[in-house]
Length: 372
Image (cartoon, rainbow, N blue to C red; front, side):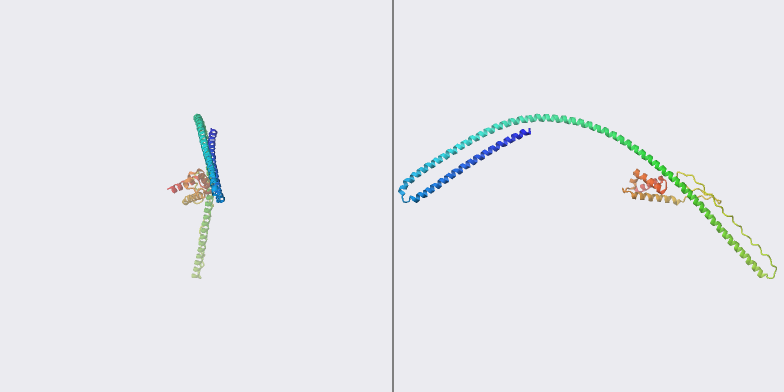
């Protein structure tokens, strides 16, 4: 269809170009004829002027004879001019008539071609309408088929997405269960390590307490022995002074035996206390056991400052851990991140040797304080 319209357009353009060329050729021929006529007129005028000058030159002496010849020549020239004018007039009339006939013929040809072209355009328009209806029906059918195919594809995609979502949900549940189990195992391991370390620390504190009790008792016995020795030395010196004083006062009298100096009682040596029994481990914070010694039993209690010290250590550890994170997260964001909390509990339990629940409670208290 596009090629046919292009052919019609090319034909029309060709006819317009032919008509323009014909009009241009007519104009150029008319101009050439006018120029030719002008040249002939100028040449004739030049010839007349030249003849006139010649005649005036060589017929001055023979004016009488020249008048007759001049009149004859003027008649001839007039007849020639009339002939030329009549010829040019006839030629102009013929050319004008021929141009009119050619123009009428071209106009008739243009009308005929226009009628044929209109008839062809009507047939083309009707064919286009029929083709357009057929194409529209075909496009509607294709659109319906594509819509049905798209609906089927969307349904398949929806089913596949639901299946993938179910699989992903199952995988996430499995992964969460695995992480929970791993966390429980890690917490259990940390608890076992903490209990073991607590037992070792309690045994070490008990042994240290026993050693210190023995050392204190030994020092007390040594001090008491030194004091008794000093007292005995002072008593002996006093007894000697009395004896010398009595001898100097009662000189010459019967010598009497000096009174025996009383010996102070010797304190028994302190015996080494028995080793403290190993305390049973507990899941909570273990307390140091009692130490049995010859002296009355002394109960060793954890100083009240140790709890506050552990709390301060945990808070400082949490602050340092949060400050080392590359995400610059707040305490609330850290609490909401399970992996970060699990790593914090594991590192805190291994580093501080405390129960992960204490670290978790401290973290929650710090988060609540920061939110308020």
